[in-house]
Image (cartoon, rainbow, N blue to C red; front, side, top):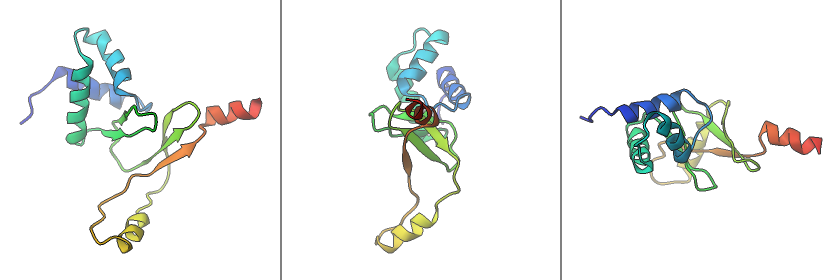
Amino acid sequence: MIKYSRQREHILQYLRSTTKHPTAETIYQHMKTEHPNISLGTVYRNLALLVQLGEIQKIASPDGADRFDANTSPHYHFICTECGAVLDLELSPLDHINLLAEHKFQGTIEGHVTLFYGKCPDCSHAAHAR
């Protein structure tokens, strides 16, 4: 059994309140307002535990700063190559990819992770306005 942690609960509440997919550093800066003695290491440990428990998901970002999302339902993400924003992409599940992969693989496919890249709406509009 995992001991209750007020800090971990506040991290989870913060992630559930946003769709911005924050980094650990962003979460740390937010948490310092309510928990001035919290360390970045504590934030990382709690994020790792929440991922392990299936309460949140970790999104690997090409800039090296993992992002975190409290929406654990199957969905896809879009990463803006211009500003680095990580956005949810409303798209029907592409489960047939698992079947295609299984035909080319002798093991068992249990799922997949797909990231889409390009320019977000804001960056696309800015590029067209120039």
